[in-house]
Image (cartoon, rainbow, N blue to C red; front, top):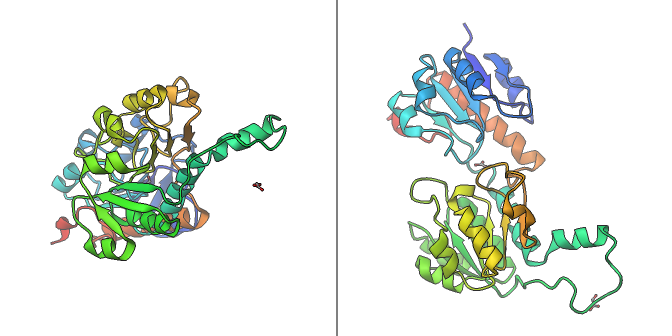
Length: 324
Ligand code: GLV
Ligand code: GLV
């Protein structure tokens, strides 16, 4: 008998075709995520779930899913999943690190550049028919070259952003639980404390996973400690920033601007103050969204799921202790 698998959305690439050849597959075909009742019902009847970061897998769901023995999240982040609860029930959880590192760093840098040089505002200005002549003071922005970039988190994505920043002649500071002396030498990075990073950076870019320690890492006090006019880039997770405090810091003019690929909540409600601030550059959580990378993520998620269903350790497993 083939294991029953529920996939919570259509996926790019050929991963789903490979999966369909081996399991009894059901795919949620809508644009919006499956409602909670659907997810609960499918989890109750499935042995494998292939999920996205929009699907919440918590203890109440697991408690109703006695046959579930494989979970694969098509994302590097897995804050949507209660991993401890999965581990307690001996369910392996897969994720998709590595393949999206460079693509995500490209986009973090695109946001940084776009915010610094006001690319979206410039585009809107031209399209609105406002371009009358060359003006010495039109749409002035901030220089990227020569500026100081503070990286919050120096994992794979933070490192890939640092490589780009080095090419742009930026000075590089970082905070990270673990020192990275190899990179300090290779890329000219300096490990500093949080206060120094906030006080000295012209740009701060966030590259930490969301967990209990990083929730609201950038809070009211941290925003106030940032250099006046500094720019914030978030391609990590929305709740790493206290968004209400961010809106205040932007409205007061203390911060120069923010570029956000992730927000809290997602999507932003239509009345979010962020939508009316001109110095905010917004994107709908697309940092890993290149044709090639999304196909690879889907394929990797399928490989993780199939391994777990066969009782093998998924190639990328966030609770590998289940297999020791
Ligand atoms: C996207 O946000 C991911 O975690 O892959
Ligand atoms: C700008 O286009 C310049 O020529 O300075």
